Length: 546
Length: 89
Ligand SMILES: Cc1cc2nc3c(=O)[nH]c(=O)nc-3n(C[C@H](O)[C@H](O)[C@H](O)COP(=O)(O)OP(=O)(O)OC[C@H]3O[C@@H](n4cnc5c(N)ncnc54)[C@H](O)[C@@H]3O)c2cc1C
Ligand code: SF4
Ligand code: SF4
Image (cartoon, rainbow over all chains, first blue to last red; front, side, top):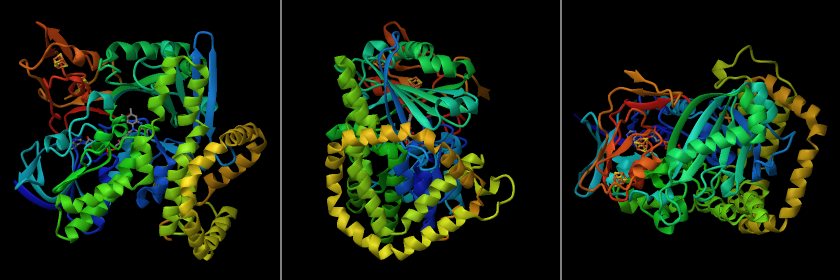
């Protein structure tokens, strides 16, 4: 059977629905193909989606009610010099109370419900979804991609194929858009999901991720593979846990992961004091899965510059190698690139030109995106490896600080400020949407509702928060012209943010640690704010009316 | 048809996937890389060549495909709606 669409989106993971929704809203006949029976059930992830994904990502996610498992306020790193002797240092980067947990560093989620929610939004916007359908090959005519052949033998013609198939890129490789990534670019992530009572997680983790890094022989993670460690994520009633290892060691040798992952998992769960004493007694293993991701592709010039488009096809998210080497977060770049791909496809179809020459603007926009470029090129995690080998305590601590501690600001500062200013330039009142997002997400989380419709009980009466938000909106609108002037003045100075944070690093560290120490003082205020948000009428967080 | 595994809780395998991963005997050098990275223990070595023992616990991660430097592994996704799935990814 031959069918005709304007756009076919391959893969309904994190990126696919974002692209499909935008194309459908632009009036394009859009089809999403997903190989799993239910969207999201084949996607394996961490998962903390860092805040920049929500701030600068698709508006429907920022202004919506996606299902989240817990807000995250930062990272507590355990730097393990000698696990048996308990010689363990900590490095912490987090938003202090009373800002946290409402003003979050990111949000944790399970892939399946989050992706299902995204897909739902795309379908409501008019995109068609076909599950249990694998795109096996492309239709190629006159050297251009003209559509997709499915495993059911259907031939689906499309003006543009937006390929969101994930990191393996089987279709992209088969269609000759890019090459298969070498094992040096891939890390295999061994993932565990533990059920654990909420009180225990609240007490031990709070809202903070826990990462562990150690010298090789500490067996915190497989020893020979470039900045490895253990990452654990607190969810609502569960803990997600991941150790990962590059598939190729220096010298090209392939590690025996079958053996190593079991050894290291056993080692860390029985020896790491806080896991062994505080978590293990009440945790139960619920699931174990693994998946590969291309976290080192962006560090190699050749791999990073492999084509991400061809006549009739655009590669998005992990399929385009946009998985982050920095914080191991691929979702923000998947969302950003899906948005850009949809814009490009819409423009191309309107111009009646879906050739590579036209689609090249997609690549230009990806390369000009400050956060995408930062996430795929920052070397911190890779360089951590050297310190794990060198056995230099100071060096190891400094490397952890640089990538996962306060030092992060010395390289994320510029791209982050650039993006904030760019968004303010486009919409000077966007701050009110951002603030509402933080409040709405927290409200949803506390009320265990993933959507407003599901919230238990009746809306509460309006109060101080409502008035504050109304004032805030009015102020935002009033000051819009001034905001634009400030943005215009600051934009040329963004390059100075990284050097400035570098120069002020000791001071920033001091302020952060002092504010964390001061937290007990703010406990009553934090509780007061949290309760206000928790009990508010959810309609006051609606950002769609602006 | 739904299968579960004791070793890997929280995951199900549905339907008939067929042999979606294949090894080309002419290209396989018996290097054992696929065995080393496959956490699902899907491979074994027989007569100095790799062989698929069973794809029953395959998580479709493609690690075997990445590490086979000799291009002996042909990797394709199983038919739509079959293979592994989990609520906890
Ligand atoms: C263990 C692990 C931990 C991670 N931790 C984090 C984290 O903490 N934060 C973060 O932001 N990111 C994290 N990531 C990365 C993140 O999961 C990915 O970057 C993200 O899923 C990429 O989105 P995507 O849409 O490009 O691909 P995916 O989400 O992988 O979606 C691809 C979809 O396409 C479908 N598909 C594939 N091929 C076909 C085909 N031929 N036909 C039809 N359908 C097809 C798949 O079934 C899937 O649903 C992690 C990844 C892993 C593996
Ligand atoms: S990795 Fe490839 S060449 Fe090596 S044993 Fe496996 S199939 Fe054979
Ligand atoms: S895809 Fe992964 S789990 Fe499946 S056989 Fe290959 S290495 Fe093993």
